[in-house]
Image 1 (tube, one colour):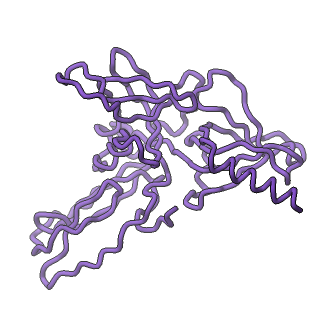
Image 2 (cartoon, helix red, strand yellow):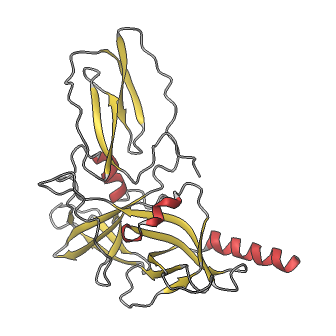
Image 3 (cartoon, rainbow, N blue to C red):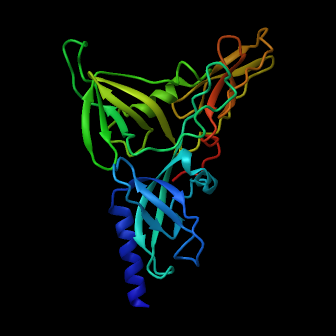
Length: 297
């Protein structure tokens, strides 16, 4: 009993202190008895080799994650730790701490069609976290103000600019939220932002895909208790965490009655906004939870 307690304590210490690793994964479809079969094969992100790690099971160590997210393995990147399990005859178990889901790029012609839903991961793909390089230049031209960090390898490259296919193709995308998750401004923040796939050439990063952290926001929105006297209505702006921020009370004017439709892979949110109290609409990725209902860390 004492030995078992020490082993569990050791595993908890490792889980807390170790840096998480990032993987793509696929289900094991072999037919034999568990735990030898029926688990998952993991492949470390940015690994050019075909080597895979077999794990007999996933254990959720983050209550904010939705277990249903891991069903579509071609759309997700997972993060956590691989450790031996006492329960599965010594086979490895994956302690799942995070899920990043592929952000859909709508078809420009038919915005209600997912054009990337069948895309597979390739060995040639490169994946990065992005942040500010903390470099200050006298002249802005040619200044490498951004930094990419190659995931699992911590190799960094500074660059001047980037391109991405989302802001021009996703209507009503919340740009404040999108940009705050794409480029990490505070390098000391523990929050894990978006993962990008792309290539860097001539001091420019060309982003082909973005994978968003499904644990977003980490903390739920504060409850709004503002009321206005009739006929006025409260108006709101939106924080980078997609939470409503009270602005002021206004008398609602005539508003456009049309309700915009978000493309497939996105869901609609709306708040009364300035200047007339009419609804302002946003299209958020479906993988994101309702910001009012997250449970917090």
